[in-house]
Amino acid sequence: MKSSLGEQFGIDFPLFAFSHCRDVVAAVTNAGGFGVLGATAYTPEQLDRELTWIDEHVGGKPYGADIIVPAKFEGKGENLSRGQLVDRIPAGYREYVARLLTDHGIDLESEQRFGGSVLSGDTSRELLDVAMSHPIKLIANALGVPPDYMIEAGREHGVPVAALVGAREHALKQVAAGVDLIVAQGTEAGGHCGEVTTLVLVPEVIEAIEESGAQVPVLAAGGIVTGRQMAAAVAMGADGAWTGSVWLTTEEAETAPHTVQKMLAASSRDTIRSAGRTGKPARQLVSDWTQAWAPRGDRAPLPLPLQNMLAEPLLRRIDVLAAQGHPGAQELATYFVGQGVGLMNKVKPAREVVREFIEDYVAATERLGNSLPD
Image (cartoon, rainbow, N blue to C red):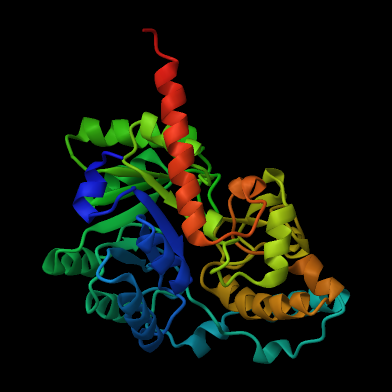
């Protein structure tokens, strides 16, 4: 495939794969795509080990890292410890989740379970330093304009900086800040996303950037799990695709076993934008957990990162119990995934997903070519 990003990054096919699993990142990169490791969940020491492993398994092929630095979060600028943030979780919320778990037959000492959060932004600079000490070829940020120190580090190390956006005006702010690559992510996406569909957002963002006079490439994201969808995005002017959900049911992924089965059985209507996991709207599988935090429900989610500190440790424990067959935990289990989950019906190796993307893309472009008059 002819692609400016393919030439820039030295890849055969401009398929960017976001994953928290190093095995997926390496497999996609080795198959001719571009793997991007979600680095926020790691400590700096853990991230160094993960990136070292990737370095050893991709033979110099390009890959990137993604570090979430939220533009807004509870306690920003106050230099609070995690313990101090935990203290801001109201007692009523602790009691609420304790009742929710009890109603599902789960007895946890919840006071000992709070405090885990990967979205407080408190280690982002350290994680960035670690990432830049490895031969990454891209650094990405979500949830707002990248901080100045990320832009500066990218310039210093010659590493392009990417940012995810869900609206036209957000893209213009990113371009003005000096971002090198825009990921236009529609509401179909898994994880944090806005309300505009991919089909509308991608050309809207591309047009806005062109009108601004900037030359910043755009990747399409949101519900893209097949090559034909990627071809549609390229037909709209995108330079490639940014994907995440499709890798959650690959053989290499670290997705919780019961959650994988839920995904394989799910339709596109079995996802919901809920703030019940992080404090910001993020698309995930519908479950009793997401229903407990419904917009018109009994309890509004806490702001980020407090909701994440409340929810994440419990949901990880729920995943373990669900895998052991606990029926209440299985009803609660959820994870970030986009509406493309309805097309994810089989566990397969990541390299096979890349191959199928390429074959499906080629077939789609041939169909488009055949539709033109002679």
